[in-house]
Image (cartoon, rainbow, N blue to C red):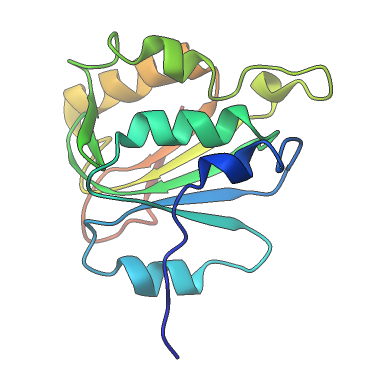
Length: 162
């Protein structure tokens, strides 16, 4: 069975407005990208972020067209830094992307997403050390979401909650 990753289709986004399903974003640079996408439960939407895409902008486009409050992002990274397509979301770029990030879980007329939004980040050491903790704290402040992120590369199920 072959697997074709699902990429963001901007014309499809307006049709999906109001979708509350969990969304799983997977960076295409991960070596196990296809395997990971195949293992996601069928009730969740899977979106592969292409290497040429501004991943932060792609995530923003999808989240602004949905009412999703549970988001998982699988990517590579370093302490305080995530690589999403051709973009970097880090302490250095949070201010650049702040307008996009503020809209990830903006409340709508139908849902108060800010009070129930959860963002799960899985990538190499994103939350590790002082830099990782500061990044998670600032990302939480901008998005308003409760954030859980990996603190090491071997056991990605060890989470730091903010």
